Length: 199
Image (tube, rainbow, N blue to C red):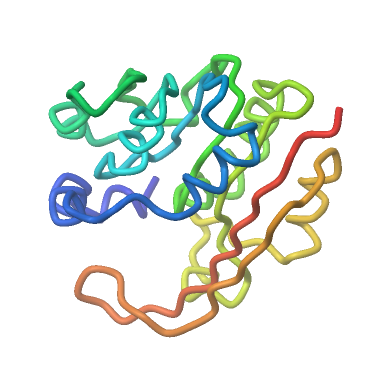
């Protein structure tokens, strides 16, 4: 995709390597039943790996997908991990079938698939979850400054709600503010949804 080709993802991920895991990780684990019976997580666009490693520290088996192959060196087992991380160096749009999972997790990534690829990838991700499985994902909203780009999917809230028609939405948060992306100014409109599959 054009957006991905213009970004040095290896440099971006190296810069972000020291950041802590997002709070959404803990919320997703709690929504999926906590640490009592950890299962499988799909981390799409695993980036610097902080979130994948946090799932693994809680005993989860993580399939981490990213187009940056330097990520593999950071996703190494250590004494704090009771789970494991399996790295997949691939374009998410090229994955024919995702493993069955209890959690699908993705931050700032699904919209970069673009409007053509996103619907089919979403169908596969929903199919990977059983009833009761948890979706914890970000989408770009229509106020995002990337809305003018044909290669980025920016979605109105009504369309996002329709995508979650078979889910119970547990929590929704919206980031609608000016910020930066690398050296450039950017307006972020990011809609984060934590939901449980109903059927």
